Image (cartoon, helix red, strand yellow):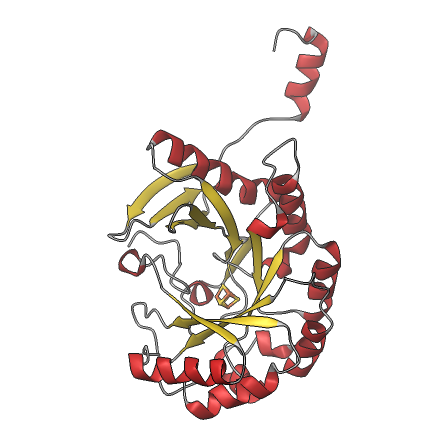
Length: 300
Ligand code: SF4
């Protein structure tokens, strides 16, 4: 930058440097999903997943290296917590994916971003907040908040702050219709009472057409029976939401199985019969361990 004075350049060099995380390895699924193993400055590795939709890509970004919550059905949870990502490391995942799309001349653009990769975003709220600010800024990436979703197990106090910030849409990883079952499946997340979380969701500030997304992973004979569906209906009756059902994606050594299709259909039907919008999310990238709950940042 020879248009800057030598003194200023020396000063900049003394105080700042530019570093880019690197895509270390790319896995490609037969369904067109890409999983990137991204190497960070300190040698840690995270995973980011680029998912093809009908006419665009969605990028699933990580917010932490590992995760401290150790949900029993989640592969990331089994690796423990290593560290929080810095805002630039979160934003870099988006920039690297856009660069990859351009270099590979892929046919769609990146339209949606979901904070659903490794980590619990609200346990790294200050950096996640900064990263959202950068993604939304019209002078940088200029995303619309409607195109970004932050997924959380629901940490009531931070969730309230996130809601007030209005920086992105929200998805809640609920996965159980009662505190007792949630304690078994997500023991650390269940340190926060379910009743408190539901209270926050009932008061969540939403525009007329907006809904909270509830994520519910279906585990065979654990949380997938008609009784569980009815319990879920009761729990969410005052929450303005739509429900995403996810058929469990097993990983090597996982303690759960995926339910049979009929079980899933009857669960979904009970929700529809009770006036909920429920959608079975088609899992993508499960052959390269890139689907929901399968990320672990290993050379597999
Ligand atoms: S499901 Fe989310 S919060 Fe739970 S262990 Fe996995 S990454 Fe962490």
